[in-house]
Image (cartoon, rainbow over all chains, first blue to last red; front, side, top):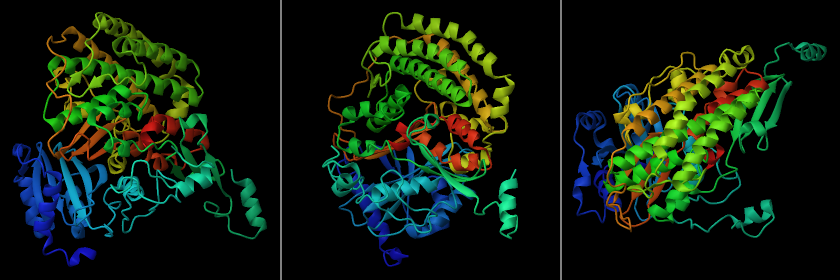
Length: 198
Length: 383
C-alpha cells in the first residue's frame, strides 16, 4: 500500500512522533508512560517484527503502535490467537503537525483474559487503511463515524458513507483545522433556509 | 400469505419466487415516530408485512459533543456529558469524572465513591424504569408506564434533594463530589428501596406471566452471544444472550468491589430475556443501594485537585457499566487545561447497530418491540 516506501524508516519516526507529540511536556512525570515489555507485547513483536512500531504503557494501560500495512493481519491475530474478541471502540486522533497525521485507535477487550489492549495505527493524510469489518462487524458504523468526522476512507468497507452528518456536508469536523464555529454554510443556507446554524 | 403477489406474478408469467421480487416495499419509520424513542429513522424494506432489510439513519441530534470537549476545560465539559444519555445523566457523569481522575492519577475519597455508587445505582433503576414503562407502552401495555413513572419520580426526587436537578444532574465533580450528602439521604434511599421490592413484583405481576406479553416478546429479536460480541452489543443485551459479564464485576470502579450482587443472565437472547434481565438488574441495584447506605464512610468528599486541571500528557480509556451497556471515555491530554481529544464510546450507538440483524424476518409490529428492547437513547447515539 501507500506506506510501502515508508516502512523501513517509520519505526523511529512514528515512535518519536507518537510519544513526542502526546508527551512533549510530560518529561517530569515520566512514571506515567513506560515502554511495555510483557509477554503479550513480546508475542506481537515476535509475530509481526517491524510492523509493531512501539509498545508502551500509559497509566498502566497497554498500547501497541502498529504499521497500517499489517492492520488486517494484526487484527485477525488479535481476535483469533490472543482472544481479543470484542472491538470495544474504534476512533481516530488528528495530529496536524505530525508527518503521519492521524492515529487510528482501537480498544480491544478479551473476555477470556479480562484485559484491554489499545492498538494505535499511525496514518498519513491520504492513506486508506483496510477495513476491520470482516474481523469485527461492529467496526462498520465506527469506521463510518471516523470517515464522517475525520475524513479517513477505509479500503473495502461495505457501506462507506457519512453517518452523523448529512451526506452532502463538506468538511470533517473532528480534524484540528476545522474550527469550532466553522460549518458548511452553503449546506445550512440551502437546507435549513437560514444564514447560520449558530 | 402471498396470494395476491403470487397471482400477479403468475399473470405476468413469472416464477413465484417472490422474496426479492418487485413486491418489495421500502417504508420509512421515523424520525418523528413515537415508538422510535426520539429521532431515529429506520428505512424498512418489506415483503408484505415482513422485514427483509433495513437501514438506520441517525445523526438528527448530533451536537458535536466531542468537538465541544476540545474547546472547553475539563471541568467545563462535565455538564455536557449529562446531555448524551439524558435519562441516565448520573452514570455519564461518573464515567467522565473517573476517566479524568485516572488521567490526573488521583482517586476520589472513599466517602465520595460510596455516594457515587448509590446515586449511580439509583440512576440505573430510574433508567430501567423509564425503559420498562415505554417498552411496555410500545407493545400495548399501558399500565406499567404509570407505575414506573411513579417510582422513577421518587428516584428523581432524591437527586433533586441531593443536587437540585432531576434530569441533567451534573452531580459529580472531577475528584469527588461538590455537595455533601443531605441529612436524610440514607433514610430516603432506604425508604425507597424497601418499598421498591414490592413494586418490582407489581410490574412482574403485570407482565411476566402475561400471555400477550409473552406472545409479543418470546423469540422476538433473537441475538445470540456470538453475534452480540461480534457486533459489540453490551449491557443487558449481551447478558440476555447468556454472557455473564458486567464491567462492575470484571473491572470494578467506584465502590462496587465492596458489595455483593449477582449478574442476571438470560438464555435465548430474545426480547423477553432482556426484559427479565433488566427487571432483575433493578433488584440487584436495589440490593447494592441497601448495602451501601449501611456504611457510608466518613471523611472528605473531594480529593486534592487544583482549580485548574492540567493532566500530564498522555491518554486513558475508562469504561463503566452504564444502564445501556459499556460506556467508555477515551481522553487524550496534551498537558493543557483542555482535553486534546475526548472520545465517548456510546453503548446506544453500538447496540443499535445490531438492530438490522434482529429485525430481519420479523413483522413490522415487532420492529417496534425490538427498538424498545435495545433501549437506545438518541441523544447518546448522535452525541
